[in-house]
Image (cartoon, rainbow over all chains, first blue to last red):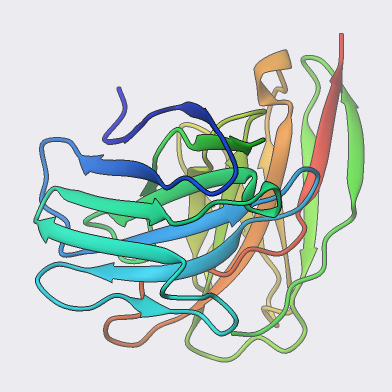
Length: 115
Length: 112
């Protein structure tokens, strides 16, 4: 079964609204989680690293004020897309490290469509 | 992280072995070779990883060239459920380096 769960799996929203996506580690603790974005027919692009109890680390070119990340507990990280616009429509995927170095557990992904 | 090169797409017949190549000529001595796959509309899943020696697990085998500049993921008997995009990723072995950088991968189509 899934060890990293995302919610919602899909969401449709109006332009200008904010959307929150949750990523939970099931039955294990994750001090670090990673958020990726994937546009159609493209590869995954790392957006940011979520750190429990501290600020997230964003990749170059990713607006931290637009993509708010909160990692308030050892099992939950949230990504909030603020003032969403159609160009933010994408597949957002979170992941958490497994016990084996280099192995990541990925969530099922959350498909965001902004109208 | 060093770059990998994979064919954009490959096809294979069902129930036959599949060999997915990956070139990584600039690999460093401490880079691990990881393979993930992504089924349609899902997040990626771990397949296998290795450093120097060939590796086997229940999903696949990983054959690593002696000079480590290339590797091959082997699916011994492809099924329709193996249709996915396969990513070959290098990860530097240093403390705290858990993140993975994905390339374009190989889209594997299985022909019934």
